[in-house]
Image (cartoon, rainbow, N blue to C red; front, side, top):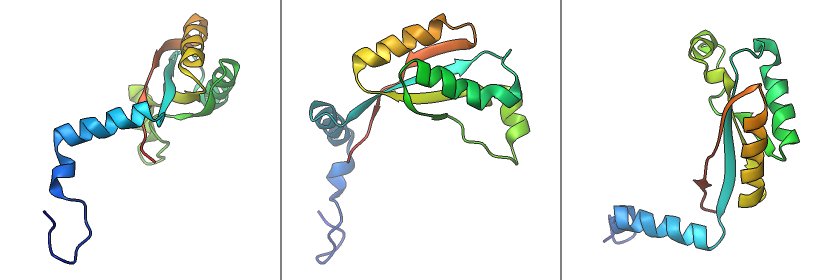
Length: 124
């Protein structure tokens, strides 16, 4: 069912839970998923050195595209800092095995409070 005879929009049935699940499954089967690792730095890391330390740790663990999970917002940075949101980072791994190795390496570092896999499916 389309919203009008001339409209080329996606039918409403494509937005059902079963259709969304099918899209996620197809994305995973076709290799359109990316293995990501999410990690939180320890609160003992100095605020000024957090970005560079996260970048260094991520690269040492074999991650690319290391970036903050919660973006920098000068207006709200004091609140982010109070809640520790500035300590959360994510990075991409080339494979599931690389992601597992990165998690193990990050967990072993004293500057990392936690590290875990964060699988994110992205459709092209």
